[in-house]
Amino acid sequence: MTRVQANLLLLLAAAIWGGGFVAQSTAMKAIGPFWFIGLRFAVATVAVLPFLFLELRKTSVKTTRRHLWRYILIGLALFGGASTQQIGLQTTTVTNSSFITGLYVVFVPLIAVAFLRRPPHWIIWPAAIMAVAGIYMLSGGLLSALTTGDGLTVVCAAFWAIQITLAGTTVSETGRPLTLSAAQFAVTAVAALFVAAIFEPISMEAILGAAPEILYVGVFSSGVAFVLQVIGQRYTTPSQAAIFLSSEALFGSALGALLLGETMPPLGYAGCALMFIAMLVVELVPEVGKRRSQPA
Image (cartoon, rainbow, N blue to C red; front, side, top):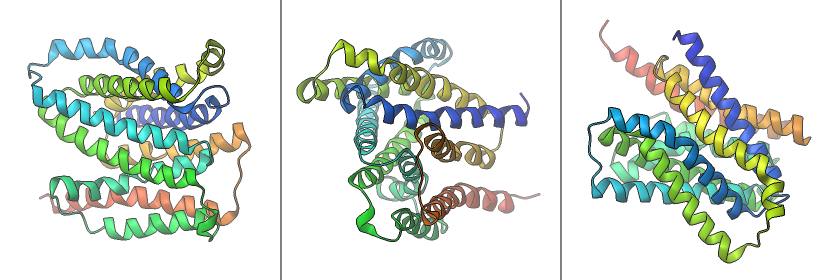
């Protein structure tokens, strides 16, 4: 596969994820947030299973009890991120959700400091300031204009950062990204369905009403897009992969405007642009520094 083809696969994955924000928003017209999360990740678990069996044939590393506990912890982090994002979408826009969620790339190095005691790259601090400024501009310069959903989405980004950090260290030990994916999807599905059964009503009419969105995010966002990401990143550079995957926020915003008619004032779009720049510099500046430090 050429680098151009790989980058196009990553762009397609980002577009699928961007469309997922719209599906998550429209689904709640028919079904509660926790039933939606539980059903989408149940579908996602089934979608990943065929790839999991292929991986098991090629992997020699045995899964230990420590790995199983790590899978559960990562699944709970995913559940936290999915829950706060889904509930947040009840009171925020797809545009806000997609850009604020993307701030996990800024949070990941900060989480690594807390969990792994890794000193952050210097670019993290200006990027964090840019991200906060972007959220402020997203509010139109009035923090009171930020909704509860916006706040929950910031928490969601922190959960994503925890999940990504723990997943990265676990996959490096096991070499089983698909096993991890299936496990975390299953944990999230069980946790969400448990909460939904206690607190949310359900009917077959509600499930059928949200079925297209459940299948889209379950099969395409969690299954197809993940496989496209795994394949594409093998044939391109980390910096280029970061650029194309970060466009998820742009696709989410564009589809929110196109399909849901969402708009915001110019200052809000400037805030989105500032957050997007923060996402990119966190990924690109360290990579450029590594290249320059390598001997010719």
